[in-house]
Amino acid sequence: MVNKTGKMGGDPMERRMIIRGVLFLAGLTALIHAGALRPAFAQQEERSLDTIMDYYDTLVKQGMDGVGNLLKSTKRERSEIEGVWDDLNERFISVFSKIGHFEFDSLLKKEKSESIAKGASEWSNSMTLLIHDLQAVGEVVAWQRQVNRDIAQREFDIEKAPNRLAGYTERLKDDGPRLEAIARDLKNRRLSSEAIQKCLDEVKSVRITAENVSGSIGRTIGYLEEDVTLGKEMDKRIAKILEDWTQMKDRHPNVAPELSDTPLNWVPLAKKHWENLEKAREEFDKVYGPFLEGKIFKDIPVFRDYEYKDLSRPAVSLEVELKTALAAAVQKEKSEAEIRRAIERDEELTRKEMDRLRELRGSVSPEKRRALQLEDARAAGGVARLRELQIVMARHPEGSAEYRKASEEARLIREEKHPEQLAVKKKLRDFEELERKVAEEIRRIHEEHEKRRKSLGMVPGLSR
Image 1 (cartoon, one colour):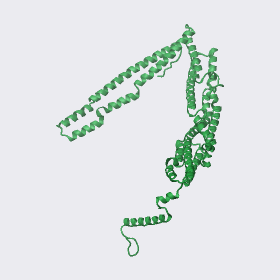
Image 2 (tube, helix red, strand yellow):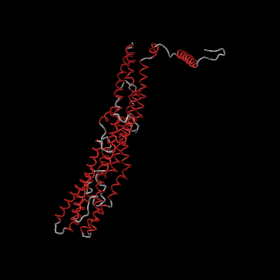
Image 3 (cartoon, one colour):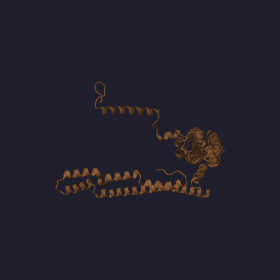
Image 4 (cartoon, helix red, strand yellow):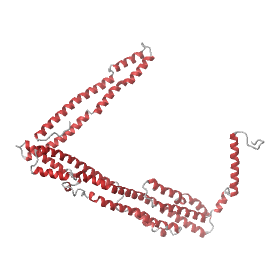
């Protein structure tokens, strides 16, 4: 309501409703004067087959321009490639075939001119076929993303190659000559028993390094082979789509030239990605060729004669030679063949002993003891249960059945005589007995091992 001064008075909510009503009426008046609220038939009279065809020609062309930009992209995320195509397809390219044709078909039925109707029908059929053919863009951009991912992966591998490959050669470059020198000194009988033992420890270290390098190389080769998705040749399906794009003008003669001409311009864009991948592959092959051919140790004595998986073999063989020399010094009455068999037997027994020691120590591990101790502390509810029982006793008279029951349970828990506690105590006693048995067996294994190694002139090979 308006007061005498001309100002709006009354409740604030009422004032807001009046203002909204005034604004709505003003807007409605403006729309009517602009012709925006004309009857439906008036709008239909203004739209014709020609205007609809022009509109969808323009809409599809906008989508195709977006495809051209998308085909230049080097992005590698699905949302940035396939997601963009889905949006272009939904908002521009496929609109006529999904919803636009309904209005078009309605107008076509009402068209009285046969020549106009015929031309419009041919356009509709051609546009529908063009939109269908353009759906292949989805396959191409998905392939394009894979190409770009492979390019990025190969470029990453190329960048890492110097440090990656040098890491392998650096670890063995001094070991090869050293193995040669030890083998030469051993053959020429220049080593004392003490020196042989030192060399044996050194050779064992080399063997472990060589085993680690072999394993790492195997994993790297597998990674290099498996971390790309595409083969050496372009996918035949993609090649066929690109070929079809060169023939779109002949295939769709009844659509606007700016539409049928565009896919031809896409072909070099798609092929450019493949060419970039081929260049990355060439550089990758140049950098990793010697590595993948098993030749990165070609300048390192000893190791250059072995495959990657067998890099530890020269160290293993030299270990046997050194052990044989040690054993021969204390078992002079035995032949070299007998000593070698004894050493081979020792290697086999030592592996079994190491496995058994791991098994024994695992059976009485600190983790298992701590778990039992925790179970013991929590048995029958532990301290938490005692607090609950104290609350129960406080709420009931001393002579009541509830009080007596709670009091008895609390006594059993405090004295560690509750059935659950007794069961855990038995587990602990069994565990302690197992610990004693394990300790005895471990002691016996070490004694037998040390005795056997001493007979061969070698130091023990088991850790305490």
